[in-house]
Image (cartoon, rainbow over all chains, first blue to last red; front, top):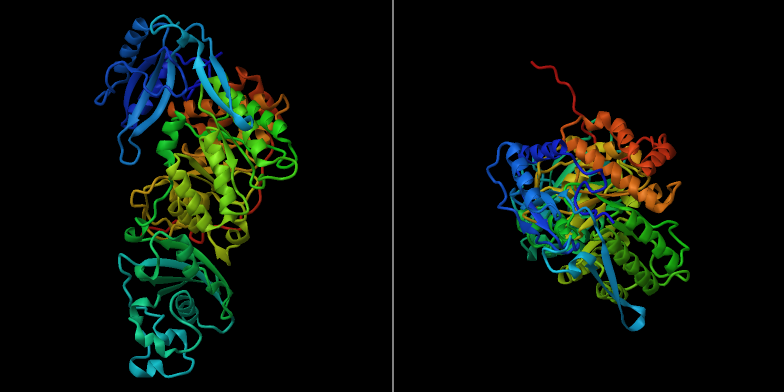
Length: 138
Length: 483
């Protein structure tokens, strides 16, 4: 299974050269880029761990590429996403978010159906990986 | 220039021209708090355009056909709407733009029904004019803030869906009518698993003999959740809760909420009051509210008569919907690129500067109301991806119904083709490429890694809908020689 969260998951994994161009696009727009990682890819797991603060004053995409290298070395088997935050009034939210590292094996998600009255069902989705404790999942 | 009859002569019993009753005030300076309406008036032969404008001002505010002494029991000068400017429409010999100002206290706060009952309530059938169109309105901040606006808005919708930096992808389940609940859910599952973010009920899918609403909701939510587990993404389906009564609509919306749906849908034909009620409900229940503009072309399409969709867009952002269909430019339905750019700006921007080329006649401050997501639906396909991104931008839902479900290799393949094409185009745009001109090459290259995209391009490569638009701007940029 391939996790398809993020803006570019349907394309072949981006090369570092391609990632750098996206970072440049973000910086040209005045957005702050940052890295986040997780081993719990549930679609509603909003708060991935921050790999440092958003780089508010970064000018050169190379700075982000150095951080990315370090993040990948530290968490080679985690999901890592690159995010870009826009502080413009009435945006104040991420404007781009895409996966830049993923585990070699992606076991996918289990769906549990709790049957209720009138044929209605309460659904629970959980990652097979999160059956194991944090740090041992991939 | 003002020809208003003054003093007691004004109230002698009988009939006097609207112009002389105080509805034509060419010296009037609109207040910042006035609501301004811009009408396109086609007077009957022989009717003075200023008199026609005064008649529209009169009949949309205090006047009736004859003088009434009871005006004198009120501060009637304040309550009279004032036509203050009449311009001939460029390139036309019998159409006029009439600017009419209304005092803010003529309107109930936060009520589209009341606003529209005045502005379009009575005047469109008036005998002295042969046709009338409401082109634009300026809503003052003081009145705008009496509306709640979209319950979710573009920013929060994206945060809830965890989808940033690209248009959302959707499709309307086809065929529109006849599928059983079980078969219907199959289409939804295939399209969502393949890569779409949303699937949608069509405007006329309510609760018919072939598929009752509860059955549809249950099967659809199975499809949504199963697709979410298969992809790790948040997925959704606009469950259409349109029904005969508010009680029925609330019942259906509550059931959708109970099943965990993130979005419900209504049709424009339910009426302004029902839309505002459903907006309140959506706000209370953290639900995204999708509006299908069913029926609008009956009054928005013809240039000389009706209400411009630009005005409907304003009213719907004020009334509070999160999504509204607003045109595709390149698809099968009416849509001039400049006009549609104007509609999209009205729905999405915090402030609209006057832009006559786009049909936007007034500066409009949205006073912090949420942004409404325009939806592009109707005869669009993957081969147009670069044009869609160029004309419509990033904050939109692109809905490929036939372009997903009609794919030769199946629905999932259709969805994959759309998503790959979209992501490839965004990647290229962000890299600074001239994607509008290189679009076909970008798609061709992306198709090398994706056979469903190649098959989609082969199937629809030559499909265009090249017809002349009826609703076009009156002002075109001209190359004025510098003096």
